Amino acid sequence: ADDWLVCDLGTDTVARLSLANGQVTDYQRRHSVAGAGPRHAVVHPDGAWVYVLNELHATLDHYRYDASDGSLHGGPFSDAPAHAGGQQSVDLLPERYVGPRSGSAIVMHPSGRMLFASTRRTGDAAPEGDSVTAWAIDARTGTLAYMARYTEGITVPRALALSPSGDLLFILNQ
Image (tube, rainbow, N blue to C red; front, side, top):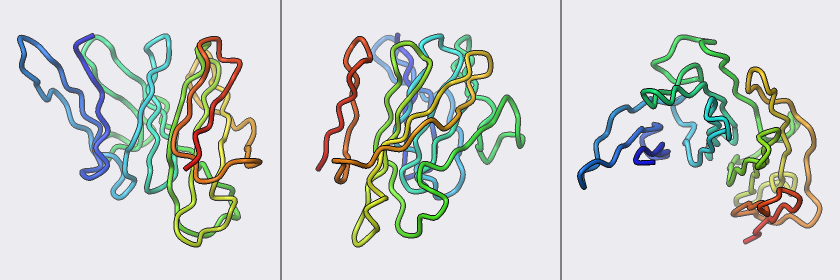
């Protein structure tokens, strides 16, 4: 495809860019919640939903994606109506967590039934800042439901990858 969704942490935007005839065109920029820091995005295999990991808030946002025009709908964008299109934002850290927040990676299972997101601690943050969470994806709405948190053997995770079959999750620590 010649269209890209680009997360821009510095401007708190998610942009839709298109490449045609050797030119990059910026078709749409949507502003996320101020200071959230969109860092990574994955598109659901059926193309209906996009999930954005926010590095600075350590949150994961769910949006409806319109492939016909490349637009994102719903989500906590500052220029979108509240709760439009199945908006959802989930915290990647435990409720009791206190300290610096840093979302680090996201990966979609090939089946589209789940995704994984990681957080990494910064500075003197508590060890529970290093984790991978598993989220079930509702097949009808795309909304996320918490499944599990993994911390064993995880130290400052930088990237996640799944095997092509989705039966192995690779966590790349710093």
